[in-house]
Amino acid sequence: MKKAIFGLVVLALVVLPGLGQLSGEWSTTIGLLPAPALKSTSLTLAYTFNSWQVKSASDWAAAGWVWQGFSAQGGLGPVTLEGDLLFGPLVPAFLYGQVIAQVSLAGVDLGLYTAMLGEAVGGTYYPPGPTGGAAVKVTAPLGDVAKLTASTGFGASLPEDGFTIHHVSGLTKTYATNPYPGGFAFTYALLAVEGLPLCCGITFDLEFSFLKSGFDYIEFVMKDAFAICCGISFDLGVKFTTTAKTISVTPKFAGFGEACFEVYGDVVGSGLYLWEGIRVDGFKIQCTLAECNYIEFVTTFNPDLFYTSATAPWSNLVYNPTSTVGLQKFFDTACGEFEYIGLGFCGAGCCGGMYHADLRIFFGTNGGLFDLTRLLATMKVPVMANFTFDVELAIAAAQCATTTLAVGWTFTF
Amino acid sequence: MNRFRMKTVVLGGLFALLGMVLSGCFLAPTPPTEATLIFSDLVGPVGGQGEVKVSVAKMPGGGLAGLVVGGESSPGVYVGLKYDPNQFRVTGVELLNNFEILAWGTHDTHPDKIPEGEVRFVAINPVEGAVDGDVALIVGNRLGGANFDFTADKANLQLVDANGASIAAYNVSLGQAPPYYVQGGEQ
Image (tube, rainbow over all chains, first blue to last red; front, side, top):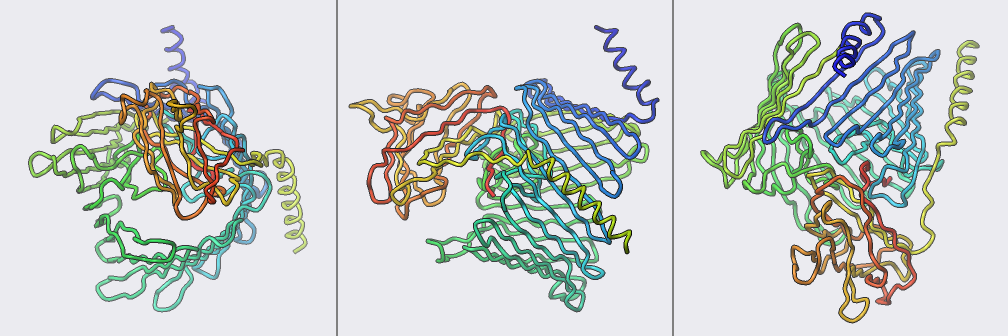
């Protein structure tokens, strides 16, 4: 057994890289506190030949071998092709397949996306069963600065955040094409124009969405409007849906980076058309000082509406999601948390790499000194040119919180 | 120009060929043709929040306006939606759309009346009936990753339409707790 493992290591580290066409990545996360446990490990192998790359990606969690994915990407004349296949070895079953064909003609990018979901993938949709569809997306420049994007779905769509398949271990896979509701029938049409110049440096975005059931929404966003002085300007947005109108104002401060004041709130109403007021659930002030250097202050008046990833609590805050699947409360309710200060910074690391660190300090009504409840820190530090060390640390500053520590690494070859 | 046209024709042909090859993948699940009460699959990671969506399709009489899960099937016999208590622990039933949850209970809220692994609830829509759409969301803690079946007996379910009449002819679709899942599916 030891000889076999040694042979595999030698093969992976010495022999295969010597062929010059095989590359890969191995990353692992191990929990050390409160109890030692393997959280996840993944191995990616890629083989490149001519203009094609074939890839295998395997992921394991404590439950076992969760994902086995294969993908191929390359060119066929002027057409770029990409294909993905995903299997669930734990069942075992086919889970997802996707083919993307893209071509660029006289500055116009045309993409055809098709996907299929296997019946082993469950969900809250009905009726269950395998589903597949396609979508077409066209992107073209309008003048020198503006861009037109049009997409139409036939049983599929292209979500902005991608289409995510979950495993109960918390591991996820995200792809471009959502194969719902399936079948070869019109699903949606989206037309977007970005960066239309008005005057005085003000640009204008427009987005119009139409579903099979009828009008969905139309949104106008005016960029860099009302420049006051000292590089201060505002983005103004208005979104009309069949039941509501949403207005957003985003101040921008040029000169020392970008400061963003964000208000988390919702309209309070009774019935479809009667507004009774606006409920403010919190606000965030974030100052971007330089690339990946920022400071942010978040205060909430209704912490129960704020969520984050269930498997990565240091990831971004999600306000009032329509579904909380795969999410957990951002603020620890046992600690009465309602506020945090976030810091992010990066700098030159070993061997030409960059280190990244994010720090969050939480405050709550059941906290300790200064109402501190816990401190979350995540760091990525390059140790060698092809080796990065990761740390995810949560330090309890009050009895209501728990200290956790996980370490990991990413090794590329 | 001719070369450009030729390239366009070739590319069009390639896309048409690709479309024909892939047309076999344009699958659409068969939509329900009869009134159906749907309990979805359980979704959510182990150690996190799990959700089961309750929805209806093709409901008659102006749509579903009232739902009792755990009604009295025979004198003194009440049984709700059953599940594996080692894998899932219900902590609440939340409203969706215009439905209101009048009451809900589990073993945790009524230890002397409801056994473990069972949830009962009453949902009504005082505004209108729902022909198609979501009614409620059963939420809880997903304790384990093993698959299991949800069970419910039609004798213990009561459906009322928008006219106040009982809905007798309907199907019940019950989900599982699959290890792989996606959210939603609406578009």
